Length: 343
Image 1: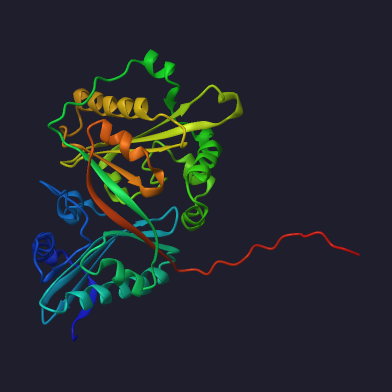
Image 2: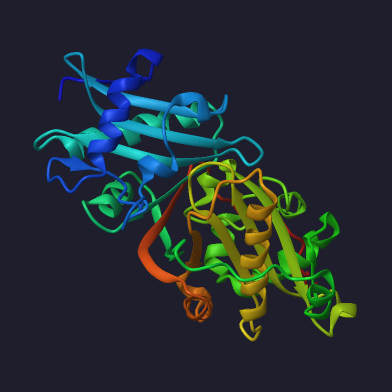
């Protein structure tokens, strides 16, 4: 391959838009992450759309150019607070060379990101078109799968809850003081290997109800286009400082689906929490300032079952199952500790 990888320029905008659109079509000469996007599929091109005005200063956009022709695109978002990068879009077109083009783009990102002090690289992709093999060949580790469930806009949202009803169900707004309880809830719900890899800190949990991406999901990049709210559900053991569930709502400001994420203890009945969340989205839409109901997306990790069944009972249907991968740019070492001595 004689082409080169470089940062995108504003003059590349038209070519990048066309490349991104073509990569979402069923074309054997095109490769993409395969995340579901609009119509029967909710695709990357509509969720994480160009133009570049949606970018933040720390975000990156690389292209692969060969003989003045752009045949590859790599879009990355950077979380400066955690020194992490998330691959949002990885597209390539061309007969026979699309796999090599994407691999060169990923390798260039890993080198560039390490120079910028990035500790972790994240990506979510459909298990097709050689996506998982590509990232594992680049040193990524597969650590989980996530089901994306979608509630169609044709189904009317439930009525918003009153404050009295929410208090009766133990639902209240999340606070920074809940950080320790949320960290404990996460450690109970999440398998130890996954928790070790994601490595959340208390300051991460304190940022709930902002643009928080904790807990992370494959749809984390769309949160920048949404008004985030976080709620917790408590039980009769509130005195023990134990939270039963966390609810995150992302009310879209752009033409895209809304976002609902739940993390709950296995024995918790989340039916009320889901109904409350959908009612809250309906209230925000009626209040104005948000986009109409374009449906609601809800990511659920495979180990969080039966949460997916509770969502299906509320009108959600399965859209896609995606694979979560991560690469660490640092080497973990054991922390020194004191041990008993025998004399």
